[in-house]
Amino acid sequence: MLKVTFLGTGGSLPTTNRNPSAIMVNRDGELIMFDCGEGAQQQMMRAKTGMMNLSSIFITHFHADHILGIPGLVQTMSFQGRTEPLTIYGPEWVEEFVKFLTAMGYYKLKFEINAIRLKSGESIKRDGYSIVALNTEHNVPSIGYALVEAERPGRFDRDKAIELGVPVGPLFSKLHHGGSVEVGGRVISAEDVVGDPRPGRTIVYSGDTRPCLGVLKASDGADLLIHDSTLADNMIDWAKESMHSTAGEAAALAKKAGVKKLVLTHLSSRYSDDATPLLNDAKALFKDVILAEDLLVIEVPLSDD
Ligand SMILES: [Zn+2]
Ligand SMILES: [Zn+2]
Image (cartoon, rainbow, N blue to C red; front, side, top):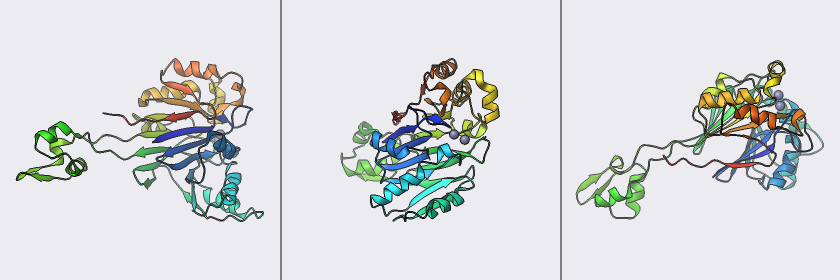
């Protein structure tokens, strides 16, 4: 399972229907957050994502709209008896942030919080996937992230295995996972019955940024790109000055990278009543695009090829 829940989709300021940036990813039961804006924990309750299995929070940058949800969230997890450590990753200043977070004297946490600083290009290896830090271009130190799953074994040709005399049962699994088996004095190897490895899924999250090479490269053929789309194209001058992207710029990057799906997020509060100008700008360039909404859930399927 690879499920993305948008907890907050507004840019900079919360509105009545959009919280600041926060994204929850559930990968086979492990919870991973990307940014954690104000109100994220209540959004988790509304979306029923759970919070105790949260292993890590990946922060793109330390603007308030991406981090203010953390103090309340950690306090709640402590009240609920969490003892497992939590790791917060981010660009420079993550160590200072965690120091402030844990020094807020009015409560004592029952679990440890670790801070790990990441530079673009560095990656965190986990069981079955990696999180890669990407170079982004904002007006404070910032990084984006790609969640990249490991390759899966190729398709198992069951008919061929039977034809070669392999009995149905545990030998199938051995072959599928790269082993060789002996049947009637003949060695049958994985290559005889297993196709080429199949790619895992990739999700890219830009955080706040101008369109940039780091995100473009990481998005090459990605299943899902979640991109800064603070403003409509007619506000491009302000997007450049504030180091954000327009919807059209996000779509142009998605098209160039050949992603399967684009989600526009971090929408400015000026579109709180009507965000269709953003969708129209993007759709003119790229078809498979949707506007993020708070509590939107996207499941990323495994591709079958
Ligand atoms: Zn922001
Ligand atoms: Zn920002």
